[in-house]
Image 1 (cartoon, rainbow, N blue to C red):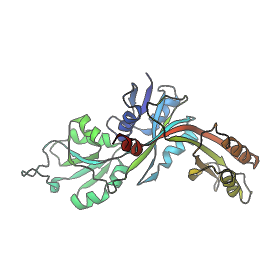
Image 2: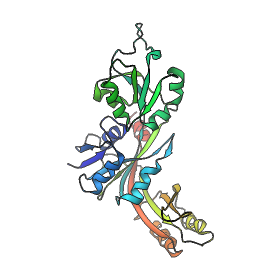
Image 3: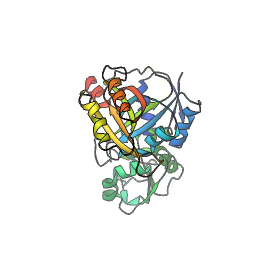
Image 4: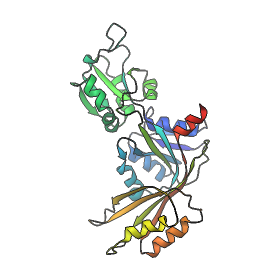
Amino acid sequence: MKSIAVLPQGTTSHEALLYLMKGEPCRPVFYKLISDVFLATARGETDYSVIPVENTIEGSVSMHMDWLIHEVDLPMQAEWIYPSVQNLIANPGEFADGKGGVDYSGIVKILSHPVAMAQCGHFIRSHAPTAELETVGSTSEAVEIVKNNPGKGWAAIGIELGAKTFGLEIIASKITDHQNNFTRFVLAGPDKLDIPRVSIGSKTSVLVTLPEDFPGALHQVLSAFAWRKLNLSRIESRPTKKKLGTYYFHIDVLEPLESVLLPAAIEEIKALGCQVRILGSYPTYTYEEEKAEVQ
């Protein structure tokens, strides 16, 4: 049974892992910090790590990508999309108004992960504008803190699995500002893994470092993909952290590495004097299309 490092039990990362594995046996190993998730697999303590890398609302999670580039050498082995549905969670009955509703005026403090908090700004301003906002390491941690502090007027923003894990109740569901709130996750580890889901395609993540003093280098790099009609789904620049003004370009190509045209494009880019590193070539999965198939 494969062991998989993931953020705490009851987080979106945990729920996304359960979705990806579709009931297949695996052993989730929970860590409080994302750095510990990375290091667990890098040190051989777990077989894989679950890493959130992009969100519909907040965009790229640059810190996590930087870890994959600078801190560990863990190839991406799968990518999938999963919805992040945030709810307001509290101890049972604490904010009941006596009429079957919720008395939001009793909320003194709201706790959550900073990303989840930012995703629910409109709800907070409308229903609990005077509440103190406290950020913690994960939505699951926020729910656990609320559970351990009943009667203080504290509530947490988290997912349904988090509420079930700690025996709390959802007092307001689906409170994110935008309902198309999805997170892109990658499974990182040294080996391929059989995923019990139907892939919608393949993707290869490439890291390109341009040569210095080469006018038009980025244009030529992109041209190597363009004239071969290789579709790019993402291009993002990140500092190399070696010299001011030098950058990596993280490029996602919608082709497997073993395709006919992609290796030739990579060789052309290398011939320009660029350094190229393959971050992974992997199957991709999507929540929306599979849900539509079931219906």
